[in-house]
Amino acid sequence: MDRILVADGNKQTVDLISKMLFNSSYEIYTASSGNIALAKIEMFKPDLIIIDTEFSDISGFDICKKIKSSAETNYIPVLMMIAVETKDILLRCVYSGVDDYISKIFDGTIFIAKIKSLLRVKHLSDHIKTQYKELKEKNEVIEFQLKMARQVQRSIIRKIDMNINGTKILSKYLPALEVGGDFFSVNEIDDNHIGLVIGDVSGHGISAALLTATISMMFDTMASKHSMPNQLLKDMNDQFCRIFKHTGNEMYVCMFYAIVDTANYTITYSNAGQVYPIFVDSEKDDVYELEIGGIPIGLMSESSYEVRKTEYSPGDYLFFHTDGLSDFFYKKEPDKFSDRIKDCLKENTNSYGDSLSDIIEGVLNEFYDYEDKNKFEKDDISIILCKL
Image 1 (cartoon, helix red, strand yellow):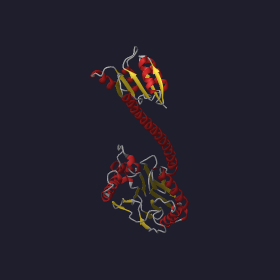
Image 2: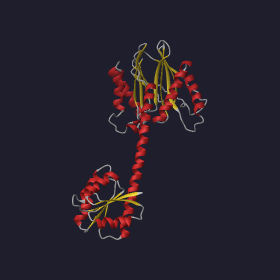
Image 3: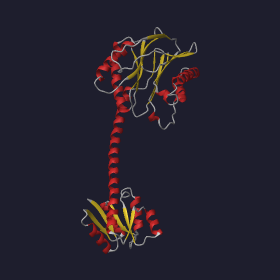
Image 4: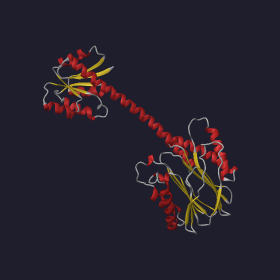
């Protein structure tokens, strides 16, 4: 039932309006002064206020200003009753926030029509407020879930800063959202072998975080069983396809896996759709990509993967990254990005030498805009830099 407050210093006017609305299923409140009207507005929060322009204690215009200046009452429509329709009165109605007005000598049909129209506006306002509140509550739940997912993901994607058998390794992770789809890991297989993996799962947000957790656990479980990167990728693809074949959703994982042999100075590697790492030959002052193809994990069952091996010399660099690094400035220009990042790595490795953090920051300053306010629209960025 809609609640209507009728405020007028003239008792006859109040009685007349109350009588007109008596059979209209409205709950009627009345007030004979401005202060009483304000008290009842605060107490009952009516759905509509019908008010006179002047009272002995405060004007109806000032009452309306108070109503419209309060967050709790500014949505309540006000119908002002005016004795004379002058330009000054109408301007005061506008400035004080009156929603509509009617002459004190009114036609009953028009009066009821105005009341129904203003109540419709109020109902719409209430509906929007309710939806907004529900949306806000849902967003708060999602925000909480994102924070929890971020904590889980941070336990999986830990910063890497280590030195294994003279090989220095440093990572950098810049998520686009609270949680993202990138993952990476470094594991010391034995005294002479280091496993490095970097990848990017399909999607973003919570779903990507869950998929990241799944693929990370699969990798940790299977890595020790395979001495060759291509065998590991094949096994992971077979398992992934079996687990997700009935979901109806296209989920896949791009992943590059390399094994560094620190005794024989070789890198053995395979790829499942991930962007190529970049090798910096310090002795020859040459930079090139470790080019090798492969189908992303989860796109096709029973896929096989190629394996390649390259030699390195102490002092060379190996730079892994996800495709988010190119998205800021070179998303549609992959060849231009490839040329520029090679030049950038050559410049920074020559300039900073052992300082892997300075090399990474030098690359990010070239390709990543820290001031961009729309990072959430971009992809995650993950980097692993090794000085071999």
